[in-house]
Image (cartoon, rainbow, N blue to C red; front, side, top):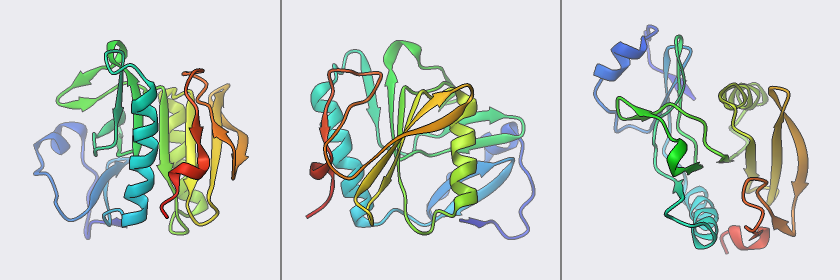
Length: 185
């Protein structure tokens, strides 16, 4: 992650007035705008495979499965906005204000790499936990594993680190995703 040179902290209101960047993926962490490079090809393929598996098993009248940079607002002061790789919302529970989502999804998945430093991963977990997201998956392509985390008492607890078998989201007990099917050939 790279911060903008000579970056100042922006407020939510200032951020709403900024032009959309096209140089990568933008997040705001405690008011500081952070630009990340675009996702790599395998990253995109993994996200799409998970999305396809979820969409094929969830009722689209009840759920949104989103893989676009949607701008998930963690908090407005100091502004923290994340762009998760994949989110699942129940349609009736979404809060959209100023064109951005201000509510917790039921599930988030992030595709990780060696570039995701432990401190950054911990901060990401803290941000998602503060929003009350009940389930979070860290997908590790290099290890071909998925770490499943559940929110308990305001923090994530690692429940499983799966390299094979089936992902079964707690919020959707009928959904099953074969882990071997999410990795690109």
